Image (cartoon, rainbow, N blue to C red):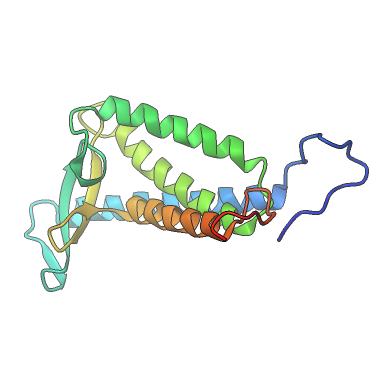
Length: 180
């Protein structure tokens, strides 16, 4: 829902924060982070030392792995750098949330923050140590890659951000001309 200009606010002044949308971002982020951490706990307790569990043949399996890199094990060995990048992303998204006027962007930001926090918790508190922890992955997609709930949320956020951008929906809720 687009925001309407406040006649009491001077022209050019920053728009006041939309606390309802910021609350939506926070609620989605908390739920995603919680589900991610609970499923990782479950995966470690149920999948350690087991053969993969087939859900849909070889197309979808549950298999416990620990990833020191990013998606597709990119940047393995640079865990500390990935951790710092995630922290920067979190700060940028939180700051940008103050400008929100779009429910779609609030959902996208909530998914992105929840996924980022879920994997950041692993990087901060799992072995081999602070800033270098390995992310718990357990959903095997046909041998192409293994991920987790945080990865699903980040991917959904990226798709939603692409759609919003293509449709020309700006953070503030106004429609632009992008993608037209």
